[in-house]
Length: 389
Image (cartoon, rainbow, N blue to C red):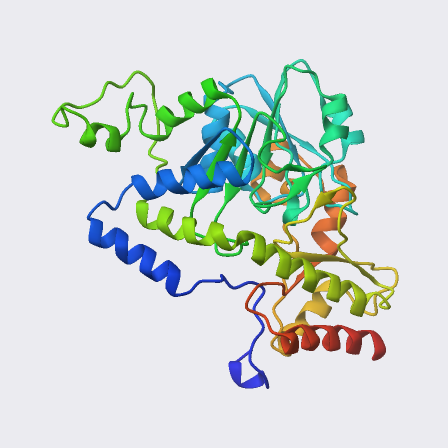
């Protein structure tokens, strides 16, 4: 489809909210001459930890490397099992394989899109060493229900990629388990381009991750260069990785974090507008605010009720695309991806909740650069599909 077929400007599924403040922050880093992990990353980490009410935060190159770093620091390896929701971005399961462990998929609740505690009980074994509950699209998983069925020996690693600023019963995401991992990809509420963050209240775990993030070095590059003998290389007692964030990204992150609460408030208001305006469409299952918590609204993901919808989800998405309105499936069912289906002998019907979500979820545009007119265009287009059926 060419752009000429789109009568009005396209409405993107997501756009980052960036401006002059981010530009000036990065220019200051260029002027300083310190481009790799340094003082701006440290500032970002400190502010992020304070905002999410945890003792420690460690910036990384992505949420994927943040998750891998946590599992590696926990000693997850061959023979271990890690429980992962079957409906999530593939990275959540991939990091388990990076460690040589086995991802054990757990079905999800098609209402919340998060891991299903009832199915979780069935998947626990003596080999279960960790669980990665995903706070999908900014809604925290039901942590009380998860903890109620988990042995104390099972570490809880929050995949909070979409959940910066979200809360569960008053507690911010990232502080609900052993450690948490966040994403700053441009589709998230705040961005550093690529980038991630680890959060934890476990000081010993934090110290181990801090070394693993920097090749296993006993001290950071900043500590060495600012110390009395910068000409001496550090000791390396661990096999580590290069998962360091740059100061350019850290500077952007500091500015973006200062906007987080405003950005989430705006998204929450527009999510409520969607729910009000679209509630009369019988085949559209709308995302809801949680009871006793705060949704971060990284995305507004609906469910299309195939029994009532006038046409299949993909046909609905095609119509919206023809009108310049971008949509996406919520995410994918991991067990239906070729690598996982073939490697582990999985069938689509093995996880019916995830299978339904894979086929029937639809994210509609929600971001901080949309106007009232943009939201009204999306609403009108969806109502037109309903009325023309």
